[in-house]
Image 1 (cartoon, rainbow, N blue to C red):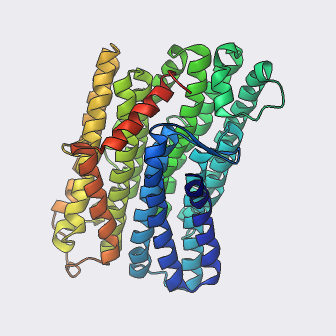
Image 2 (cartoon, helix red, strand yellow):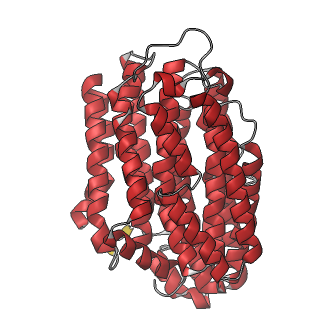
Image 3 (cartoon, rainbow, N blue to C red):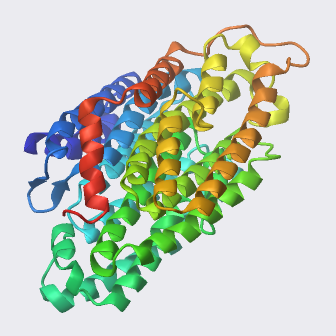
Length: 486
């Protein structure tokens, strides 16, 4: 297991370094292979993490909760790296300089998102998420347009402000721990959880609120979400998929680590109430904004805000079933949103526009990507038999178990309305005939189809029969979140 941790921490970085030296054709193959191998390495961690904690070199620590988020990132890294081979071939940026910058940035971005859940303490976790900000901002701006530059600048300003708050949360949690553990401790999760009942309450309360606000900026929780639609819209499609399916989840993982400490120190009521407020606000705002969007990638971005709200509400319920549903939702959202962005990328490449009013005839001109895009939207709308139906059912059932009847009702209504807004726009994109002459029927590249097919299969597996080891992993992670073990 120690070798797997080291490989996960070094392979994407080695691939980025290799892309500095090798030709563009070799860079894309190196990146695609590294993405697929990284996901295989994460899968190899599942059995060990389902039954305990794997630690190495003091700063590496992986448990069941970590591996859930590593699975989301590893899967998307592999899928997006393969998809990007076709995306660059089918695009208008054939020059080597663009390709080299893209592959280097993609691998470093994935490396930082894989590193974050493996960090053993809150300080290193903050550093890893800060690295994701720097690299992803450069990737948002890589198209070198005015819109991309503006979106990247807005992202840097808001994300930096949020991470400043997250750093302040780290300072306050260090202050709380120093009262019990002495000033030389290293912000390790295990130490803080063991000392939880003795931590000063006021400092922990403040640290948790600051962490939700700070890391919530990167998660896309309302009201600190405003960078997200612009960045998702202007970034290259593979980057948008990673931003939405992986980066938001990794940032939510950081909130969950603070949630664990807060539960250990304060009990569950206070942190659950904080997450409830942010979750309901995110769900309701996204529900409204999903109606009337004019840019297909902005539409999917607001869907991400909705799903982050669902995660926060699910944790606020606190019931074991709801927590298991949240963990399943992380994986389902990664696959579904990755598929949706990759499908939207094919539509944009084929029809030459991101504007919903200009994209028509998706089913007519794209024999594979058109139907796959519809399936991705159905999955995001929690339609059976996909994984998000199962996860949202478990979250709502957990809300009823915890007697949060009103919030469970709000969740059901909000999710239903959000799906109607999403489906209304997408129906026009794929069903209405294209005005004027249509491009030739066919896919821009087979590389852009294969990872989406794999994503659909993953969603069906999560919805119909999650593997036994994955179910065991969720059970172990739930015990970590509800404070029964460290």
